[in-house]
Length: 384
Figure 1 (cartoon, rainbow, N blue to C red):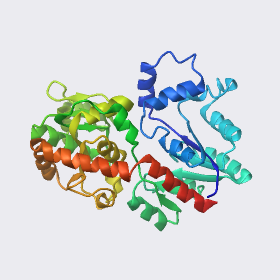
Figure 2 (cartoon, rainbow, N blue to C red):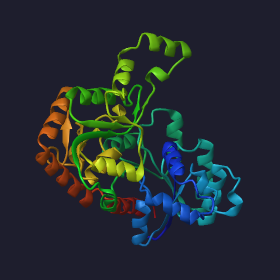
Figure 3 (cartoon, rainbow, N blue to C red):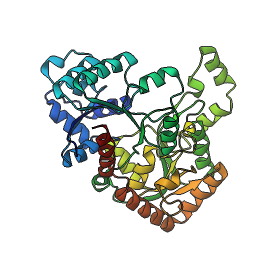
Figure 4 (cartoon, one colour):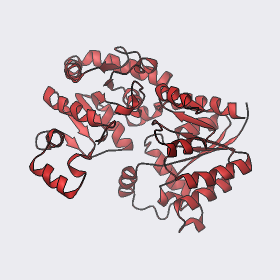
């Protein structure tokens, strides 16, 4: 097995960073390593799990968070006033990686990626990246061609990328079992939860509005943690005024869902708090972005099953490649079926718990970050 040094460059949700630093304000005296450790202890999203397991198999591996300037500027004293991309280029030169992994190919401009590509070519390093959307413009295709391998989280996208001549590899989202041990709630309510955002627009999340409305109409105990973006807040001033006076169906649904006087709607939560709330509910609902087609594999699927919460997700052909339907997860094809199944699961908590247990066992056995690290390493070995 070829040995190499890997540096991942990625980002963290800005809303999470604001939340994290609101809770941890006394950070000025912390070193880079101390603040990094504090951040990783919260286990938000992918954290640095894959790098821990790569190091276990002898690969030098590190992640830097491009947009976390409070952390990035602590890397070295002379980084205090540096811009994000300038810091990253210095980190690349300092770390001298054999593999530069861009965790989201959209975080930099084409010009910036070309600078990294020039460095990689000069040092004979490999440039790889992750992309979980279908490239529909020539600009995105031009960016993707800079990478020697592109990873994506659904086989459906792998097939579409390869049809466009892209060297695509399947690298699904995953779950770290120690998160369950660390953050699982002590008791679980026979209630439904949806944790996530709704971004309105064609091929995005408009189908989640209907899902949330059906939850309310089902009259099952439920909570929604997240935000709705777009809709009546989008468009021109004239359009917003018009919508406030003559709301269309979408705006009426938003107001209905977010009326906190009637429904359990709360702001976004992250990291440890996210996992505690997720594991305190018996059922978690899920709905993929419309643009994914028949693909499946968003992060919530693995978070819910990992925290032993019964997953009720939209029916996709690829679900069966990830979990055994009706044994490890439950699916729905229509909103009427969603409403029926969410009621059935809350009326049959023992069966829901059995499905949740089986789903967790599959996630721990197959969809762990340890296995994800091994999969990534197998793909990278092909480049050496």
